[in-house]
Length: 290
Image 1 (tube, helix red, strand yellow):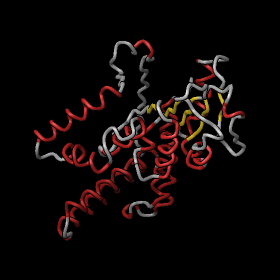
Image 2 (cartoon, rainbow, N blue to C red):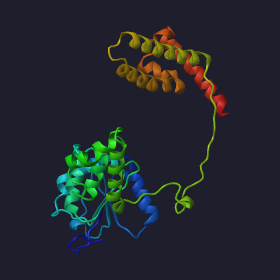
Image 3 (cartoon, rainbow, N blue to C red):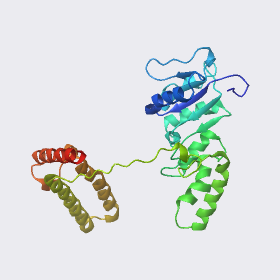
Image 4 (cartoon, one colour):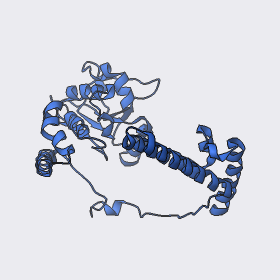
């Protein structure tokens, strides 16, 4: 591929640290010897020589981009024909250092930028703006203008007509620059393996069940106390529910997990209780798998 001046340059691919080796394997599998891949990652990382001449792809991680942003943003050291982000939700926060580094490099790369993401919007519309701001800098306006014209109108739930108008307008703006694949698309169904389910029912041991019920009772008492005494019960209630949702799976997985944090008081001697329950849990798990 070539840069804006028609010079052959490598493509820059940025991925989460845990996916660097996976991308290397995929390049080896699908590209073989047809592409020259240079991995810029790890303690002994080094830029390809001769401004990247003879290299097709430079593969690196978001963390490495942030650390070495000056090198990647220096055309004297290396230039790129395009920039590709995998799991682009890593730049959803425009104030994060990694986001600033990626966009600084992207603006120097220039004309060809791509973002791959399965979750372009996780919590709020500003995340979508941050990703599109990398792909098409300035296309959706600055962050404050986007909030005024789209985020606030879409995230509010009272004025349905305003929400619908803003959503339709935003969709028309981003659709020409966005390719979306669904698992239901007929073109990609042949590429997906059949789903294989192995149901495995594991009964709770007697002690483990007591552990679970004790924790359940403890949270019920907390909710009742909050309802009577708390000045802002609705707010506290949500906090207690989230705490319960976090703690209860520990009992289902293994009471040792809950004991490591703190067992419910109504369980009595928590340490011996947890370990007895763990032994029961192991026996039941082995029996269920067998």
